[in-house]
Amino acid sequence: MTGHRLAAVLAATAALVLAACGISPDDQPRALPIPPTTTTPSAPVTTGGSASAVLWYVDDQSLVPASRALTDRSLGTALGALLEPGASLEGELSNSIPAGTQLLELQLDAGVLGIDLSGSFEELAGPARQLAIGQLVLTATEDRGVEEVRFLVDGEPVLASSPERGDVTSVTACDFAPLLPSAEEAAAAQLSSTTVERLDQRRSELERDCPSS
Image: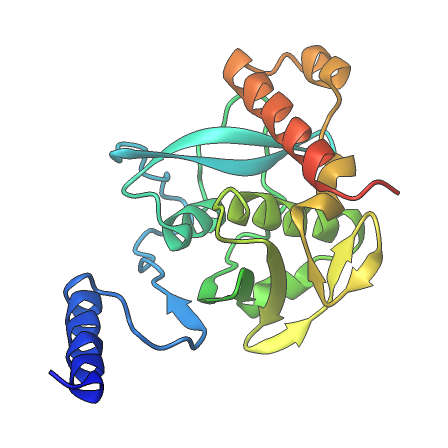
C-alpha cells in the first residue's frame, strides 16, 4: 500500500470513529445543548434527578455553593437549573438572577464560554448584577472545560462586572474570589458542612490558580 493510499485509509477510519462517538471532526466553536424550560414561574425545580451538580447562590452578599440533584451533569442543564424559578434552597440562600431570565444559547470555544441571556438580565445593576454574574461564572467553571466566560443579552455582547477589574468583556472565576465568604464568615452563617467543605475546596483552587495581585 502506497503512502498516499495509507494516509487516506487512516483519515477515513478516524472520521468513522469520531462519527461513531458523536464527535464532530471540525474545530469550530460548538453550541451546547440547553434543555427546554417547561415550568411556570411558581413551579418548584425538580430535584429527583440522577446526577449531582454544584450551583452557586447568594448568602448575605457572598457567593456560596449548593449541591443540586439534576437530570444530568451537562453545562446546559446546570446553568438552566440556576435560572429556574422556585428553587428550594437551604438556609438563607437566594438567587440574584432576575426571575424570568432565560438561557438562550451557550457556545464553547477553546475554553471560552459565551452565555446568551434574555433581556430580563439587563434589569440588574450594581452589586446585584455583580453577584448574578458571579453565580453564573462560578457555576459554569465547575466544568473543567470552561476557563473564561463572556456574556450576551439577546445575542448582543455586554460587559461583565468584576469586583477585581470593573467592567470587562470577559471574566474568570478568579474575578469573583473576593465574593467567597471566609471560613469565619461561613461558620457565622451556619452553612451546612457539605457547603463549607466545597467552599474550602474552591477557595483553595482559586488561591492556587489565580495570579496574586
